[in-house]
Amino acid sequence: MDKLSAPARTRFKRFCSERTFGVWMGRAMVACFVAFLAFFVSLPYALLRDVRGLELYLSWIVSACLWSVAVGIYLRKVLKR
Amino acid sequence: MMFEFLALFLAYVCIGTAIAFASRRFGIASTREMFVAGYRLSGFLAAMTYAATTYSAFMMVGLVGLAYVFGVVALGFELTYFVATLGILATVGVALWRLAKVRGWVSPSEMIGDLYGSTKLSIFVALTYLIALVPYLAAQIKGMGEVFRGIGMGYELGVALGTAIAFLWIALAGVWSVATTDAFQGVWMLGAATCLALWLSLCLAPSMGTDVGSALMRLANASNGNLLSCRWPLHVFLGYAIPWIFFALTNPQVVQRLYMPRDAAAYRRMVVLFAFFGILYTVLTTFIGMVFRGLAMGSNIESELLTNRDAVTPTILSMAPPLLASFVYVSIVAAACSTANSIALSVASCIVRDLYEKRRGSTDPGKVRVLTLAIVGILLIVASIVAALRVSYVVELSVLSSAILIPLAPVTLAGLFLEPRRWGWVAQMASIAVGYLAIPLAFIEGVRSVFVSTILGLPPTMWILIASTILSLSGCRPRKRAYREYVL
Image (cartoon, rainbow over all chains, first blue to last red; front, top):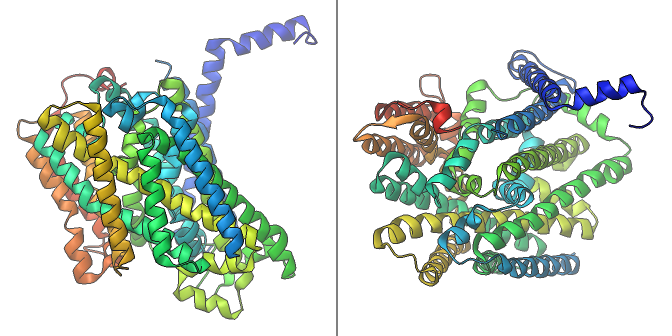
Protein backbone atom coordinates (compact mmCIF):
# COMPACT_ATOMS: atom_id res chain seq x y z
CA MET A 1 0.00 0.00 0.00
CA ASP A 2 2.84 2.39 0.90
CA LYS A 3 4.46 1.75 -2.47
CA LEU A 4 1.41 3.16 -4.30
CA SER A 5 1.34 6.79 -5.44
CA ALA A 6 -1.03 9.14 -3.63
CA PRO A 7 -3.74 9.19 -6.37
CA ALA A 8 -3.53 5.39 -6.75
CA ARG A 9 -3.86 5.01 -2.99
CA THR A 10 -6.97 7.22 -3.00
CA ARG A 11 -8.48 5.23 -5.86
CA PHE A 12 -7.71 1.94 -4.11
CA LYS A 13 -9.24 3.15 -0.84
CA ARG A 14 -12.34 4.34 -2.70
CA PHE A 15 -12.65 0.98 -4.43
CA CYS A 16 -12.41 -0.83 -1.10
CA SER A 17 -15.08 1.37 0.46
CA GLU A 18 -18.20 -0.54 1.39
CA ARG A 19 -20.45 1.00 -1.26
CA THR A 20 -18.14 0.65 -4.27
CA PHE A 21 -17.14 -2.86 -3.24
CA GLY A 22 -20.82 -3.80 -2.86
CA VAL A 23 -21.63 -2.49 -6.34
CA TRP A 24 -18.75 -4.48 -7.87
CA MET A 25 -19.77 -7.59 -5.96
CA GLY A 26 -23.33 -7.17 -7.25
CA ARG A 27 -22.04 -6.89 -10.82
CA ALA A 28 -19.83 -9.95 -10.34
CA MET A 29 -22.82 -11.91 -9.04
CA VAL A 30 -24.98 -10.99 -12.04
CA ALA A 31 -22.10 -11.81 -14.43
CA CYS A 32 -21.58 -15.22 -12.82
CA PHE A 33 -25.29 -15.96 -12.92
CA VAL A 34 -25.59 -14.97 -16.60
CA ALA A 35 -22.51 -17.05 -17.46
CA PHE A 36 -23.96 -20.00 -15.53
CA LEU A 37 -27.21 -19.79 -17.51
CA ALA A 38 -25.27 -19.55 -20.77
CA PHE A 39 -23.26 -22.67 -19.96
CA PHE A 40 -26.22 -24.58 -18.61
CA VAL A 41 -28.01 -24.10 -21.93
CA SER A 42 -25.53 -26.69 -23.16
CA LEU A 43 -27.92 -29.37 -21.78
CA PRO A 44 -30.66 -28.90 -24.43
CA TYR A 45 -27.86 -28.17 -26.92
CA ALA A 46 -26.31 -31.53 -26.15
CA LEU A 47 -29.64 -33.28 -26.39
CA LEU A 48 -30.08 -31.97 -29.91
CA ARG A 49 -26.51 -32.35 -31.14
CA ASP A 50 -24.03 -35.20 -31.05
CA VAL A 51 -21.15 -33.63 -29.09
CA ARG A 52 -17.87 -35.49 -29.70
CA GLY A 53 -15.43 -33.31 -27.73
CA LEU A 54 -15.17 -32.32 -24.08
CA GLU A 55 -17.25 -29.14 -24.46
CA LEU A 56 -20.30 -30.53 -22.63
CA TYR A 57 -18.16 -32.01 -19.82
CA LEU A 58 -16.18 -28.81 -19.31
CA SER A 59 -19.14 -26.44 -19.72
CA TRP A 60 -21.08 -28.24 -16.98
CA ILE A 61 -18.11 -28.02 -14.61
CA VAL A 62 -17.50 -24.34 -15.39
CA SER A 63 -21.20 -23.51 -15.03
CA ALA A 64 -21.38 -25.22 -11.63
CA CYS A 65 -18.30 -23.24 -10.48
CA LEU A 66 -19.81 -19.95 -11.67
CA TRP A 67 -23.11 -20.77 -10.00
CA SER A 68 -21.26 -21.45 -6.72
CA VAL A 69 -19.51 -18.07 -6.94
CA ALA A 70 -22.79 -16.29 -7.69
CA VAL A 71 -24.48 -18.00 -4.72
CA GLY A 72 -21.56 -17.11 -2.43
CA ILE A 73 -21.75 -13.43 -3.39
CA TYR A 74 -25.54 -13.40 -3.14
CA LEU A 75 -25.44 -14.87 0.37
CA ARG A 76 -22.86 -12.32 1.43
CA LYS A 77 -25.34 -9.61 0.43
CA VAL A 78 -28.50 -11.24 1.80
CA LEU A 79 -27.09 -12.30 5.15
CA LYS A 80 -25.83 -8.81 5.95
CA ARG A 81 -29.41 -7.60 6.45
CA MET B 1 -4.72 -56.27 1.11
CA MET B 2 -6.60 -57.52 4.19
CA PHE B 3 -3.79 -56.31 6.48
CA GLU B 4 -3.71 -52.81 4.93
CA PHE B 5 -7.49 -52.57 5.10
CA LEU B 6 -7.58 -53.70 8.73
CA ALA B 7 -4.87 -51.22 9.72
CA LEU B 8 -6.60 -48.29 8.00
CA PHE B 9 -10.04 -49.34 9.25
CA LEU B 10 -8.73 -49.52 12.83
CA ALA B 11 -7.13 -46.08 12.42
CA TYR B 12 -10.44 -44.76 11.05
CA VAL B 13 -12.45 -46.17 13.97
CA CYS B 14 -9.95 -45.03 16.63
CA ILE B 15 -9.59 -41.47 15.29
CA GLY B 16 -13.36 -41.17 14.76
CA THR B 17 -14.13 -42.44 18.26
CA ALA B 18 -11.54 -40.10 19.79
CA ILE B 19 -13.11 -37.15 17.92
CA ALA B 20 -16.61 -38.21 18.97
CA PHE B 21 -15.47 -38.58 22.58
CA ALA B 22 -13.78 -35.16 22.54
CA SER B 23 -16.98 -33.57 21.25
CA ARG B 24 -18.71 -34.49 24.54
CA ARG B 25 -17.30 -31.24 25.92
CA PHE B 26 -19.91 -29.30 23.90
CA GLY B 27 -22.56 -30.83 26.17
CA ILE B 28 -25.98 -32.26 25.33
CA ALA B 29 -28.10 -30.94 28.18
CA SER B 30 -31.29 -30.49 26.14
CA THR B 31 -33.15 -31.88 23.12
CA ARG B 32 -31.93 -28.91 21.10
CA GLU B 33 -28.32 -29.75 21.94
CA MET B 34 -28.90 -33.42 21.18
CA PHE B 35 -30.48 -32.93 17.74
CA VAL B 36 -29.52 -29.47 16.39
CA ALA B 37 -26.38 -28.64 18.39
CA GLY B 38 -28.21 -25.81 20.18
CA TYR B 39 -28.16 -23.82 16.88
CA ARG B 40 -24.47 -23.08 17.47
CA LEU B 41 -22.53 -25.11 14.92
CA SER B 42 -19.53 -23.40 13.27
CA GLY B 43 -19.50 -22.87 9.50
CA PHE B 44 -16.84 -25.53 8.91
CA LEU B 45 -18.62 -28.22 10.95
CA ALA B 46 -21.99 -27.33 9.41
CA ALA B 47 -20.53 -27.58 5.90
CA MET B 48 -18.75 -30.87 6.50
CA THR B 49 -21.71 -32.55 8.19
CA TYR B 50 -23.99 -31.33 5.39
CA ALA B 51 -21.62 -32.68 2.73
CA ALA B 52 -20.86 -36.02 4.43
CA THR B 53 -24.57 -36.60 5.13
CA THR B 54 -25.63 -35.75 1.57
CA TYR B 55 -22.93 -37.70 -0.24
CA SER B 56 -23.37 -41.37 0.61
CA ALA B 57 -21.60 -44.52 -0.60
CA PHE B 58 -23.57 -44.00 -3.83
CA MET B 59 -20.95 -41.49 -4.98
CA MET B 60 -17.91 -43.77 -4.94
CA VAL B 61 -19.80 -46.89 -6.07
CA GLY B 62 -23.03 -45.94 -7.88
CA LEU B 63 -21.93 -42.70 -9.55
CA VAL B 64 -18.57 -44.12 -10.69
CA GLY B 65 -20.53 -47.02 -12.29
CA LEU B 66 -23.05 -44.61 -13.81
CA ALA B 67 -20.26 -42.49 -15.33
CA TYR B 68 -18.62 -45.69 -16.65
CA VAL B 69 -21.80 -46.85 -18.41
CA PHE B 70 -23.43 -43.55 -19.47
CA GLY B 71 -20.48 -41.11 -19.57
CA VAL B 72 -20.81 -37.36 -19.17
CA VAL B 73 -24.56 -37.47 -18.51
CA ALA B 74 -23.79 -38.85 -15.03
CA LEU B 75 -21.93 -35.61 -14.29
CA GLY B 76 -24.87 -33.58 -15.63
CA PHE B 77 -27.31 -35.51 -13.46
CA GLU B 78 -25.25 -35.07 -10.28
CA LEU B 79 -24.46 -31.42 -11.03
CA THR B 80 -28.18 -30.75 -11.55
CA TYR B 81 -28.67 -31.92 -7.97
CA PHE B 82 -25.71 -29.77 -6.85
CA VAL B 83 -26.91 -26.61 -8.62
CA ALA B 84 -30.48 -27.05 -7.32
CA THR B 85 -29.25 -27.64 -3.76
CA LEU B 86 -27.11 -24.49 -3.82
CA GLY B 87 -30.12 -22.55 -5.14
CA ILE B 88 -32.28 -23.88 -2.30
CA LEU B 89 -29.59 -23.13 0.30
CA ALA B 90 -29.26 -19.54 -0.95
CA THR B 91 -33.00 -18.81 -0.87
CA VAL B 92 -35.36 -21.13 1.03
CA GLY B 93 -32.50 -22.36 3.20
CA VAL B 94 -31.89 -18.87 4.59
CA ALA B 95 -35.58 -18.61 5.49
CA LEU B 96 -35.58 -22.03 7.17
CA TRP B 97 -32.40 -21.21 9.12
CA ARG B 98 -33.86 -17.93 10.41
CA LEU B 99 -37.28 -19.35 11.25
CA ALA B 100 -35.83 -22.42 12.98
CA LYS B 101 -34.22 -20.20 15.59
CA VAL B 102 -37.33 -18.00 16.00
CA ARG B 103 -39.78 -20.91 16.20
CA GLY B 104 -37.47 -23.30 18.06
CA TRP B 105 -37.70 -26.13 15.51
CA VAL B 106 -35.76 -29.27 16.31
CA SER B 107 -37.13 -31.84 13.86
CA PRO B 108 -38.25 -31.34 10.22
CA SER B 109 -41.65 -32.96 10.97
CA GLU B 110 -42.11 -30.46 13.80
CA MET B 111 -41.34 -27.67 11.30
CA ILE B 112 -44.06 -28.82 8.88
CA GLY B 113 -46.54 -29.28 11.72
CA ASP B 114 -45.75 -25.76 12.96
CA LEU B 115 -46.08 -24.19 9.50
CA TYR B 116 -49.62 -25.61 9.22
CA GLY B 117 -50.51 -25.48 12.93
CA SER B 118 -51.24 -29.22 13.09
CA THR B 119 -49.70 -31.90 15.31
CA LYS B 120 -51.52 -34.59 13.29
CA LEU B 121 -49.61 -33.46 10.22
CA SER B 122 -46.26 -33.54 12.02
CA ILE B 123 -46.95 -37.13 13.20
CA PHE B 124 -47.93 -38.14 9.65
CA VAL B 125 -44.70 -36.61 8.31
CA ALA B 126 -42.65 -38.38 11.01
CA LEU B 127 -44.20 -41.73 10.03
CA THR B 128 -43.54 -41.01 6.35
CA TYR B 129 -39.87 -40.40 7.13
CA LEU B 130 -39.79 -43.68 9.06
CA ILE B 131 -41.32 -45.68 6.18
CA ALA B 132 -39.24 -44.03 3.46
CA LEU B 133 -35.88 -43.90 5.21
CA VAL B 134 -35.51 -47.30 6.92
CA PRO B 135 -34.73 -48.99 3.55
CA TYR B 136 -32.31 -46.13 2.79
CA LEU B 137 -30.63 -46.77 6.14
CA ALA B 138 -30.51 -50.51 5.42
CA ALA B 139 -28.91 -49.82 2.03
CA GLN B 140 -26.09 -47.85 3.71
CA ILE B 141 -25.43 -50.70 6.17
CA LYS B 142 -25.58 -53.17 3.28
CA GLY B 143 -22.91 -51.06 1.54
CA MET B 144 -20.60 -51.47 4.56
CA GLY B 145 -21.25 -55.25 4.51
CA GLU B 146 -20.40 -55.41 0.80
CA VAL B 147 -17.05 -53.68 1.40
CA PHE B 148 -16.12 -56.28 4.02
CA ARG B 149 -17.31 -59.09 1.75
CA GLY B 150 -15.18 -57.68 -1.09
CA ILE B 151 -12.11 -57.65 1.16
CA GLY B 152 -12.85 -61.24 2.21
CA MET B 153 -13.70 -60.51 5.83
CA GLY B 154 -17.35 -61.53 5.76
CA TYR B 155 -20.50 -59.60 4.93
CA GLU B 156 -22.08 -60.08 8.38
CA LEU B 157 -19.01 -58.68 10.14
CA GLY B 158 -19.25 -55.52 8.02
CA VAL B 159 -22.95 -55.15 8.83
CA ALA B 160 -22.33 -55.63 12.57
CA LEU B 161 -19.32 -53.29 12.73
CA GLY B 162 -21.03 -50.62 10.61
CA THR B 163 -24.09 -50.67 12.85
CA ALA B 164 -21.99 -50.54 16.02
CA ILE B 165 -19.88 -47.58 14.80
CA ALA B 166 -22.95 -45.63 13.67
CA PHE B 167 -24.58 -46.18 17.08
CA LEU B 168 -21.44 -45.38 19.09
CA TRP B 169 -20.82 -42.10 17.29
CA ILE B 170 -24.40 -41.00 17.98
CA ALA B 171 -24.41 -42.20 21.60
CA LEU B 172 -21.28 -40.28 22.61
CA ALA B 173 -22.60 -36.72 22.08
CA GLY B 174 -25.69 -36.73 19.83
CA VAL B 175 -25.41 -34.47 16.82
CA TRP B 176 -22.18 -32.94 18.13
CA SER B 177 -20.32 -36.25 17.76
CA VAL B 178 -22.11 -36.91 14.46
CA ALA B 179 -21.04 -33.50 13.08
CA THR B 180 -17.42 -33.73 14.23
CA THR B 181 -16.99 -37.30 12.94
CA ASP B 182 -18.72 -36.23 9.69
CA ALA B 183 -16.02 -33.58 9.27
CA PHE B 184 -13.33 -36.23 9.72
CA GLN B 185 -15.11 -38.64 7.37
CA GLY B 186 -15.66 -35.91 4.78
CA VAL B 187 -11.92 -35.18 4.68
CA TRP B 188 -11.24 -38.93 4.35
CA MET B 189 -13.76 -39.27 1.48
CA LEU B 190 -12.34 -36.32 -0.44
CA GLY B 191 -8.75 -37.45 0.18
CA ALA B 192 -9.47 -40.97 -1.07
CA ALA B 193 -11.25 -39.76 -4.22
CA THR B 194 -8.37 -37.36 -4.99
CA CYS B 195 -5.73 -40.08 -4.52
CA LEU B 196 -7.63 -42.55 -6.71
CA ALA B 197 -8.10 -39.98 -9.49
CA LEU B 198 -4.38 -39.06 -9.32
CA TRP B 199 -3.31 -42.73 -9.40
CA LEU B 200 -5.58 -43.35 -12.39
CA SER B 201 -4.12 -40.35 -14.25
CA LEU B 202 -0.46 -40.60 -13.27
CA CYS B 203 0.07 -44.37 -12.88
CA LEU B 204 -2.59 -46.56 -14.51
CA ALA B 205 -3.07 -44.59 -17.74
CA PRO B 206 0.71 -44.25 -18.50
CA SER B 207 1.24 -47.96 -17.65
CA MET B 208 -1.31 -48.78 -20.38
CA GLY B 209 0.55 -46.56 -22.85
CA THR B 210 -2.01 -43.78 -22.97
CA ASP B 211 -3.07 -40.64 -21.12
CA VAL B 212 -6.22 -39.21 -19.55
CA GLY B 213 -7.04 -36.90 -22.47
CA SER B 214 -6.93 -39.76 -25.00
CA ALA B 215 -8.96 -42.00 -22.69
CA LEU B 216 -11.67 -39.36 -22.40
CA MET B 217 -11.75 -38.67 -26.14
CA ARG B 218 -12.21 -42.38 -26.82
CA LEU B 219 -15.58 -42.21 -25.08
CA ALA B 220 -17.10 -40.64 -28.20
CA ASN B 221 -16.82 -44.04 -29.90
CA ALA B 222 -17.96 -46.35 -27.07
CA SER B 223 -19.81 -49.58 -27.82
CA ASN B 224 -23.03 -48.23 -26.30
CA GLY B 225 -22.93 -44.83 -28.05
CA ASN B 226 -21.22 -41.47 -27.75
CA LEU B 227 -20.58 -41.03 -24.03
CA LEU B 228 -19.43 -37.42 -24.44
CA SER B 229 -22.95 -36.29 -25.35
CA CYS B 230 -26.15 -36.47 -23.35
CA ARG B 231 -27.10 -40.15 -23.65
CA TRP B 232 -30.44 -40.02 -21.82
CA PRO B 233 -33.68 -38.82 -23.38
CA LEU B 234 -35.09 -35.72 -21.63
CA HIS B 235 -37.82 -37.68 -19.78
CA VAL B 236 -35.26 -40.09 -18.28
CA PHE B 237 -33.00 -37.20 -17.25
CA LEU B 238 -35.97 -35.46 -15.60
CA GLY B 239 -37.23 -38.71 -14.05
CA TYR B 240 -33.93 -39.25 -12.24
CA ALA B 241 -33.16 -35.58 -11.55
CA ILE B 242 -36.50 -34.39 -10.06
CA PRO B 243 -36.25 -36.26 -6.72
CA TRP B 244 -32.67 -35.02 -6.35
CA ILE B 245 -33.45 -31.42 -7.30
CA PHE B 246 -35.65 -31.21 -4.20
CA PHE B 247 -33.49 -33.46 -1.98
CA ALA B 248 -32.45 -30.50 0.24
CA LEU B 249 -36.13 -29.92 1.11
CA THR B 250 -37.44 -33.48 1.28
CA ASN B 251 -34.90 -35.45 3.31
CA PRO B 252 -35.00 -34.77 7.07
CA GLN B 253 -31.30 -35.43 7.67
CA VAL B 254 -30.33 -32.50 5.41
CA VAL B 255 -33.26 -30.19 6.28
CA GLN B 256 -32.30 -30.48 9.95
CA ARG B 257 -28.75 -29.39 9.14
CA LEU B 258 -30.07 -26.03 7.93
CA TYR B 259 -31.14 -25.18 11.50
CA MET B 260 -27.68 -25.63 12.99
CA PRO B 261 -25.27 -22.80 11.88
CA ARG B 262 -24.68 -20.42 14.80
CA ASP B 263 -24.87 -17.11 12.87
CA ALA B 264 -25.09 -15.56 9.41
CA ALA B 265 -21.35 -15.88 8.80
CA ALA B 266 -21.47 -19.59 9.75
CA TYR B 267 -24.44 -20.16 7.42
CA ARG B 268 -22.63 -18.49 4.52
CA ARG B 269 -19.44 -20.43 5.23
CA MET B 270 -21.47 -23.65 5.33
CA VAL B 271 -22.86 -23.01 1.84
CA VAL B 272 -19.53 -21.93 0.34
CA LEU B 273 -17.58 -24.88 1.80
CA PHE B 274 -20.32 -27.32 0.84
CA ALA B 275 -20.15 -25.94 -2.72
CA PHE B 276 -16.38 -26.49 -2.78
CA PHE B 277 -16.71 -30.04 -1.41
CA GLY B 278 -19.66 -30.95 -3.63
CA ILE B 279 -18.21 -29.84 -6.93
CA LEU B 280 -14.83 -31.40 -6.22
CA TYR B 281 -16.24 -34.76 -5.09
CA THR B 282 -18.72 -34.91 -8.00
CA VAL B 283 -16.10 -34.10 -10.62
CA LEU B 284 -13.59 -36.57 -9.12
CA THR B 285 -16.02 -39.52 -8.94
CA THR B 286 -17.41 -39.03 -12.45
CA PHE B 287 -13.86 -38.47 -13.77
CA ILE B 288 -12.78 -41.83 -12.28
CA GLY B 289 -15.66 -43.68 -13.97
CA MET B 290 -15.20 -42.00 -17.34
CA VAL B 291 -11.42 -42.34 -17.50
CA PHE B 292 -11.57 -46.02 -16.50
CA ARG B 293 -14.12 -46.66 -19.25
CA GLY B 294 -11.75 -45.01 -21.74
CA LEU B 295 -8.88 -47.18 -20.48
CA ALA B 296 -10.94 -50.39 -20.45
CA MET B 297 -12.30 -49.95 -23.98
CA GLY B 298 -11.65 -52.96 -26.17
CA SER B 299 -10.78 -55.27 -23.26
CA ASN B 300 -12.85 -58.16 -21.85
CA ILE B 301 -13.74 -56.37 -18.66
CA GLU B 302 -15.41 -53.51 -20.55
CA SER B 303 -18.46 -55.54 -21.55
CA GLU B 304 -18.59 -57.45 -18.25
CA LEU B 305 -18.84 -54.20 -16.27
CA LEU B 306 -21.53 -52.79 -18.56
CA THR B 307 -23.99 -55.34 -17.16
CA ASN B 308 -22.83 -54.93 -13.53
CA ARG B 309 -21.97 -51.27 -13.00
CA ASP B 310 -21.69 -51.58 -9.19
CA ALA B 311 -18.60 -53.73 -9.83
CA VAL B 312 -16.71 -50.90 -11.56
CA THR B 313 -15.16 -49.44 -8.38
CA PRO B 314 -14.11 -52.86 -6.96
CA THR B 315 -12.53 -53.67 -10.35
CA ILE B 316 -10.54 -50.41 -10.36
CA LEU B 317 -9.46 -51.06 -6.77
CA SER B 318 -8.35 -54.61 -7.60
CA MET B 319 -5.72 -53.03 -9.90
CA ALA B 320 -4.66 -50.33 -7.40
CA PRO B 321 -1.86 -50.72 -4.80
CA PRO B 322 -3.30 -52.38 -1.65
CA LEU B 323 -2.78 -49.30 0.54
CA LEU B 324 -4.64 -47.01 -1.89
CA ALA B 325 -7.41 -49.59 -2.41
CA SER B 326 -7.83 -49.92 1.37
CA PHE B 327 -7.89 -46.13 1.75
CA VAL B 328 -10.73 -45.93 -0.80
CA TYR B 329 -12.62 -48.91 0.69
CA VAL B 330 -12.54 -47.25 4.13
CA SER B 331 -13.77 -44.01 2.49
CA ILE B 332 -16.80 -45.96 1.19
CA VAL B 333 -17.45 -47.22 4.73
CA ALA B 334 -17.08 -43.61 5.97
CA ALA B 335 -19.53 -42.28 3.38
CA ALA B 336 -22.10 -44.96 4.30
CA CYS B 337 -21.58 -44.50 8.05
CA SER B 338 -21.86 -40.68 7.96
CA THR B 339 -25.12 -40.91 6.04
CA ALA B 340 -26.49 -43.76 8.19
CA ASN B 341 -25.96 -42.13 11.58
CA SER B 342 -27.36 -38.80 10.35
CA ILE B 343 -30.52 -40.51 9.07
CA ALA B 344 -30.95 -42.55 12.26
CA LEU B 345 -30.57 -39.48 14.50
CA SER B 346 -32.82 -37.34 12.33
CA VAL B 347 -35.65 -39.90 12.18
CA ALA B 348 -35.25 -40.46 15.93
CA SER B 349 -35.58 -36.70 16.52
CA CYS B 350 -38.90 -36.68 14.63
CA ILE B 351 -40.23 -39.56 16.74
CA VAL B 352 -38.95 -38.21 20.07
CA ARG B 353 -40.08 -34.65 19.43
CA ASP B 354 -43.47 -35.27 17.80
CA LEU B 355 -44.62 -38.58 19.22
CA TYR B 356 -43.25 -38.26 22.76
CA GLU B 357 -42.04 -34.86 23.92
CA LYS B 358 -44.88 -32.76 22.49
CA ARG B 359 -47.59 -35.19 23.61
CA ARG B 360 -46.21 -35.83 27.09
CA GLY B 361 -44.84 -32.34 27.60
CA SER B 362 -41.73 -33.92 29.11
CA THR B 363 -38.42 -32.14 28.68
CA ASP B 364 -36.34 -34.17 31.15
CA PRO B 365 -33.04 -34.37 29.22
CA GLY B 366 -32.04 -37.68 30.81
CA LYS B 367 -35.26 -39.41 29.77
CA VAL B 368 -35.16 -37.88 26.31
CA ARG B 369 -31.56 -39.03 25.85
CA VAL B 370 -32.35 -42.61 26.87
CA LEU B 371 -35.40 -42.65 24.62
CA THR B 372 -33.42 -41.24 21.68
CA LEU B 373 -30.71 -43.85 22.05
CA ALA B 374 -33.34 -46.59 22.31
CA ILE B 375 -35.02 -45.41 19.10
CA VAL B 376 -31.69 -45.00 17.28
CA GLY B 377 -30.72 -48.50 18.47
CA ILE B 378 -34.01 -50.02 17.29
CA LEU B 379 -33.76 -48.25 13.91
CA LEU B 380 -30.19 -49.40 13.35
CA ILE B 381 -30.92 -52.98 14.49
CA VAL B 382 -33.98 -53.25 12.20
CA ALA B 383 -31.97 -51.80 9.30
CA SER B 384 -29.04 -54.14 9.98
CA ILE B 385 -31.37 -57.18 10.15
CA VAL B 386 -32.85 -56.19 6.79
CA ALA B 387 -29.30 -55.75 5.44
CA ALA B 388 -28.05 -59.02 6.99
CA LEU B 389 -30.96 -60.97 5.50
CA ARG B 390 -29.85 -59.61 2.12
CA VAL B 391 -33.39 -58.68 1.16
CA SER B 392 -32.89 -58.34 -2.57
CA TYR B 393 -35.14 -55.30 -3.09
CA VAL B 394 -33.73 -53.16 -0.24
CA VAL B 395 -31.53 -51.10 -2.58
CA GLU B 396 -34.49 -50.61 -4.95
CA LEU B 397 -36.64 -49.48 -2.00
CA SER B 398 -33.95 -47.05 -0.88
CA VAL B 399 -33.94 -45.51 -4.37
CA LEU B 400 -37.71 -45.34 -4.17
CA SER B 401 -37.51 -43.27 -0.95
CA SER B 402 -36.47 -40.24 -3.00
CA ALA B 403 -39.70 -40.53 -5.02
CA ILE B 404 -41.88 -41.11 -1.93
CA LEU B 405 -40.53 -37.94 -0.29
CA ILE B 406 -41.00 -35.61 -3.33
CA PRO B 407 -44.32 -34.13 -2.03
CA LEU B 408 -42.56 -32.74 1.02
CA ALA B 409 -40.99 -30.09 -1.25
CA PRO B 410 -44.26 -28.36 -2.27
CA VAL B 411 -45.64 -28.90 1.25
CA THR B 412 -42.63 -27.09 2.80
CA LEU B 413 -42.59 -24.30 0.21
CA ALA B 414 -46.35 -23.68 0.46
CA GLY B 415 -46.14 -23.60 4.26
CA LEU B 416 -43.31 -21.05 4.13
CA PHE B 417 -44.65 -18.66 1.54
CA LEU B 418 -48.46 -19.05 1.77
CA GLU B 419 -51.08 -18.83 4.51
CA PRO B 420 -52.59 -22.26 5.37
CA ARG B 421 -56.39 -22.53 5.24
CA ARG B 422 -58.25 -23.83 8.30
CA TRP B 423 -58.21 -27.42 7.05
CA GLY B 424 -55.01 -26.93 5.09
CA TRP B 425 -53.27 -29.74 6.93
CA VAL B 426 -55.72 -32.29 5.40
CA ALA B 427 -54.71 -31.10 1.92
CA GLN B 428 -51.05 -31.43 2.92
CA MET B 429 -51.63 -35.00 4.16
CA ALA B 430 -53.30 -35.85 0.83
CA SER B 431 -50.37 -34.22 -0.95
CA ILE B 432 -47.83 -36.31 0.99
CA ALA B 433 -49.93 -39.46 0.39
CA VAL B 434 -49.45 -38.96 -3.38
CA GLY B 435 -45.79 -39.94 -2.88
CA TYR B 436 -46.89 -43.37 -1.66
CA LEU B 437 -48.33 -44.06 -5.15
CA ALA B 438 -44.74 -44.74 -6.20
CA ILE B 439 -44.79 -47.95 -4.10
CA PRO B 440 -47.53 -49.87 -6.01
CA LEU B 441 -46.11 -48.61 -9.30
CA ALA B 442 -42.68 -49.96 -8.31
CA PHE B 443 -44.15 -53.34 -7.31
CA ILE B 444 -46.18 -53.69 -10.51
CA GLU B 445 -43.73 -52.30 -13.07
CA GLY B 446 -40.40 -52.40 -11.18
CA VAL B 447 -38.54 -49.60 -9.38
CA ARG B 448 -36.76 -48.46 -12.54
CA SER B 449 -40.11 -47.66 -14.16
CA VAL B 450 -40.77 -44.96 -11.51
CA PHE B 451 -37.87 -43.02 -13.01
CA VAL B 452 -37.61 -44.02 -16.67
CA SER B 453 -41.18 -44.82 -17.84
CA THR B 454 -43.58 -42.15 -19.07
CA ILE B 455 -47.24 -41.42 -18.40
CA LEU B 456 -48.66 -39.05 -21.03
CA GLY B 457 -45.10 -38.14 -22.00
CA LEU B 458 -43.89 -37.25 -18.50
CA PRO B 459 -41.98 -39.39 -15.95
CA PRO B 460 -43.98 -40.62 -12.90
CA THR B 461 -41.78 -38.53 -10.55
CA MET B 462 -42.92 -35.40 -12.44
CA TRP B 463 -46.58 -36.46 -12.05
CA ILE B 464 -46.05 -36.97 -8.32
CA LEU B 465 -44.59 -33.44 -8.10
CA ILE B 466 -47.43 -31.90 -10.13
CA ALA B 467 -50.24 -33.70 -8.24
CA SER B 468 -48.76 -33.00 -4.82
CA THR B 469 -48.18 -29.32 -5.71
CA ILE B 470 -51.82 -28.89 -6.79
CA LEU B 471 -53.09 -30.58 -3.61
CA SER B 472 -50.70 -28.58 -1.44
CA LEU B 473 -51.71 -25.26 -3.01
CA SER B 474 -55.39 -26.11 -2.56
CA GLY B 475 -54.86 -26.00 1.20
CA CYS B 476 -53.31 -22.51 1.20
CA ARG B 477 -54.09 -18.91 0.28
CA PRO B 478 -51.80 -15.90 -0.32
CA ARG B 479 -50.01 -14.75 2.81
CA LYS B 480 -51.18 -11.41 4.20
CA ARG B 481 -47.77 -10.36 5.46
CA ALA B 482 -45.09 -9.51 2.91
CA TYR B 483 -42.66 -12.30 2.12
CA ARG B 484 -39.56 -10.24 2.88
CA GLU B 485 -40.89 -9.20 6.26
CA TYR B 486 -41.76 -12.77 7.19
CA VAL B 487 -38.88 -14.71 5.78
CA LEU B 488 -35.96 -12.44 4.89
